[in-house]
Length: 118
Length: 235
Image (cartoon, rainbow over all chains, first blue to last red; front, side, top):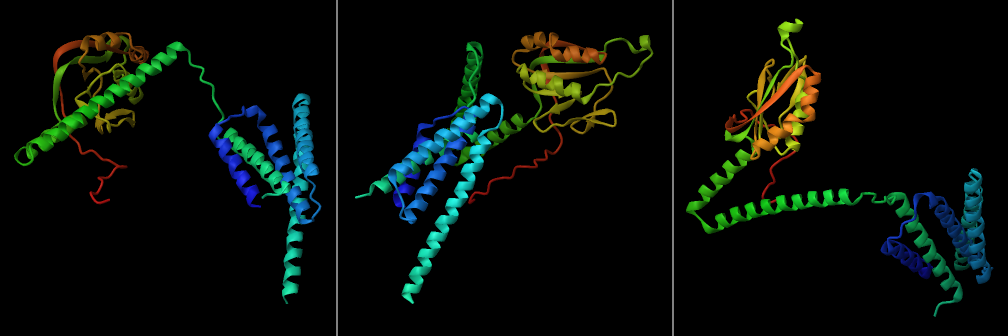
């Protein structure tokens, strides 16, 4: 948990310090990439809580999601259709799904601890 | 120390943080290309140099004042303060000013009796354009038909009449007096100015003459300052 937060802060400071700018027309790719990253992070946390975490699947999932989402966005730009919306929709739905699972896992852990104490 | 799972999480969080920062930076400040050419850059540089010079002059003046305050601890203090007050009043336009400058005559372009029209109206917009242009030509102090223009002077149309400093400007002809250290240059620039053309479109003629000595009246009304208040010493 702490390592993830430290990593996030490192990433933010790296972004601020490098003062790297991406041209406005690529902001869609960036947004989709952020969504893919968030999705992977939430998926990883869920798998970790369910004790099904697999490092290779985690990293592989991130890259495959990223490639597919950015690829869809690219294809959409070439065809003139907002195909990136498909990626946004799919990743967004999965994000909420992961969150619901994490919440239920945490709640289950908390209630089982409570019953043990009593 | 850390398991590989945690390290993986950390790396991904780092990547995510980086991407997030990038997207915020892209959304907040779209990077604009500097498309100025060499001449525009030179112009900008010379403008900044002028600004620096102005600020340095101002600093020098204030430092001199400070030195005067410090050199004369008691008896000279009042004198220095009076001098500073007078200087400030002069800057604000509350004193009469004399010096070289130009006199601009605003007259009808065509005699009224020829076209059967007696009245040639001057509009506030015309006068505002003229004042702006005079300022851009480096004019010092300006008085329109005996009304001294200061930083807070309004020029506006009220029921078809032009009011400067809440005083009605008389019908043409009237004169505009402008103080300037470079009277001849200002006169030449006025002769080819846009204002002259705009006045001509309103059937008014602008003629200017450079004079060695002219006197501007003082601004004689209270100045209403709406958005400033004195700083309390302890605040």
